Amino acid sequence: MDVARGMLPFIAAYDLLQGHPSLTHDKRKPIEQWFRSLSEVVREGMRRWEDNDDFGGQSFQNHHAAHVLGLVLFGVVLQDDELIRLASDSPDNPKDFKELVAGLILMPGDQPHGGLRNKPLHAGEIQDRHRTSEGGGLTYCHLSLTLMLYTAEVLTRHTGKDWVNWTAPGGENFRLSAVFYSDFFRLRNARIKGDYYFRDQRAIQNNTPYLGTFEVALHHWPDAPNLKAIVKSMNRSRTPRSWLCYYGLPLLTHGVELRGGGDVD
Image (cartoon, rainbow, N blue to C red; front, side):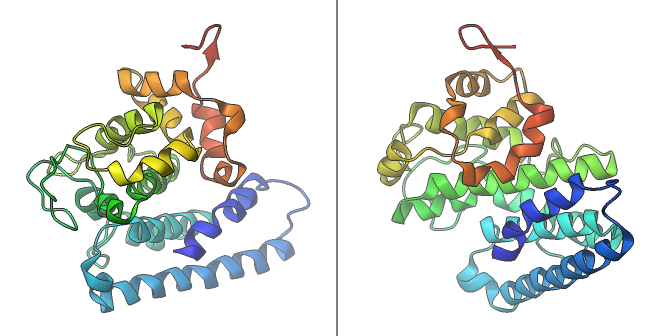
């Protein structure tokens, strides 16, 4: 997980340097060898999760989303189609992109990790909701959505297919999750929509999460009122710099322009 997430800014920087005359073959070779060796670290992490029953049955959560993101990033930068297939849609990977969309995103009637705890289950909630028992469930759900949406962006740009709007057989898709969670972060209120996330109130009240995920979501689904509302409420000047690597590039192309009194254009 740490390797996959930590390498994102390095791979993004390497991608930006493509075509620069100073990036010669001799300079590329050790960089790509480094990327290749680290891709094996991600694959080993995936094997360990599978061999240990996802460490207590924690299937379909943010660690798996990080693994898939890492494989996709390394596959694209190394031009390794086999690695990309393993990450996106492969019988050899029980937690590939499509399996994750179906398993990580919840629908009414599902049995999420930790049970329902007598709280309603809404379409689009994410398996990391179980972490709310310790506080931080909203943060981890936001993280899983960010990792998966970034992965979908990269796959879409690389393959020409629309992975952002891919919908699993059960109806699970990213739009459902983006719309569901946007209201929590816009209102800074963890007690809405059934009060399941009430333990996260302090975290969501005091911290400034990175909301670029919702801005990219609005680019894809401009007809969603919830997404329009959160983008209008965003204060870009307070964006934590530590989050910028996750959506710096997509925001350059997908960022929604705000004009005048905050109208979304």
